[in-house]
Amino acid sequence: MKKIKRILIPLLVLALSGCLAGCKNTKDNYRTLEEIKKAGTINIGVFSDKNPFGYVDENGNYRGYDVYFADRLAKDLGVKINYVSTEAANRTEYLQTGKVDVILANFTVTKERKEEVDFALPYMNVSLGVVSKNDRVVKSLEDLGADDAVIVISGTTAETYLIKNYPDIPLQKFDSYATAKEAFENGTAVAWANDNTEVIAFAMQNKGYTVGIPKLGSSDTIAPAVARGNTSLLEWMNQEIEKLGEEQFFHKNYDETLADTYGEEYKETLVVEGKKTD
Amino acid sequence: MDFAYMKNVLPLYEKAAVLTLRIGLEGIIFATFAGIVCAVILYEKVPVLRQLVMVYIEISRNTPLLVQLFFIYYGLPKAGIVLSAEICGAAGLAFLGGSYMAEAFRSGLENVAPLQRESAYSLGMGKLQTMRYVVGPQAVATSIPAFLANVIFLLKETSVFSAISLMDLMFTAKDLIGLYYKTTESLLLLVIFYLFILLPVSLTGAAVERRMKYAGSGS
Image (cartoon, rainbow over all chains, first blue to last red; front, side, top):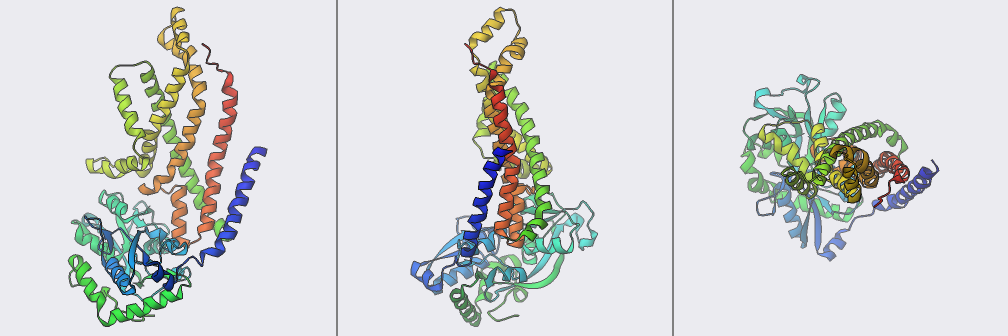
């Protein structure tokens, strides 16, 4: 016992003191607009496995709706861009620890997230959706049996929504889009809940799947996020998004990156052009 | 520090700790069996099997557990073999651990002076008897430190289980950070729970090691 105490107590003290010292600093771990310009490089967090929003193509280049926008931001800011690949659950963390200046990883604006990071103006509409196999299309979550697992990605709004509203549904959690898709194709779960944009894209890109629930929960928006309190960068981004709205930039972005997947059908429901929505 | 939050999520950590321990122990038990069998095959230089064991050990030791898990969990279903995530986790751990255990036991066996084996044979003892009464006990005693190091190593390796959707301690902490953004609290709980699992193992290990010192490697 003595030995355990001798080891445990210093460890606990170390962990606690480390936090007390560290916690205060995390809020100021961002670079201002000036600092980014001076450094000449902006770090932007994007997905690397969420086709067609943020993914790496065969040649190793980042592509997608988010990336197209990120490229433009860097160009207008006059700096080079450094893409940082992120997982859904890491997004707030990456901002708070200063690993990235901006998150452009299909980040849905929610009340809880607003307390952790600052969102700029939205550039996309989104809500949740559920995709399932054709031989058993899930039209309502009430239809699920007690053992019917639903796939979600850790750290997404779909996960939060299901935990809150359907606590009895067994969730199969994955930390990346790539592994979730693979598992879903292997048939480990009856359905996959995610952003409806994502599940619609999945059903369009893979034969044998139907989006049984195209809309679940509330309608939300997707926006770029910066570290909380980074006003100089936030204000510049908002001006930039308004300016881009005037030239219908996001419609063009849709044509370039999303039209191949969604066709024209979803253009007006998906795209938001630089205006305040709240 | 948000202690109310920590109290709230405690049951999730407990569940994760149980899962981590259960799959860890299943994996370790199978790894130990595999290790003993492989070590004896190597020590007795059984033809054909010996080559197979050597190939297995090289594959198992020179590929990361993550890759092995991907193969079992995402690869095998393509060949029509669908296993639950839990079985995949234990199987992956056993596959990885088997080779490390084999090496630990083999070095234990080889540490027993050949003279002892030859003496046993000349006294008229058979192969099995020699293994059971002369070589085996000494080999076990000398391989205990390596065995326990492997146990701790394998328990820690469970932290990559998130890749196959197993809610082990590591994934639970990551998931909670993504859900509630309480990074420091979640990570602190993670450290405490890992220590809670691993400290007893390493302390019992030290005690067992002291007690097993009787085996001399007498020549």
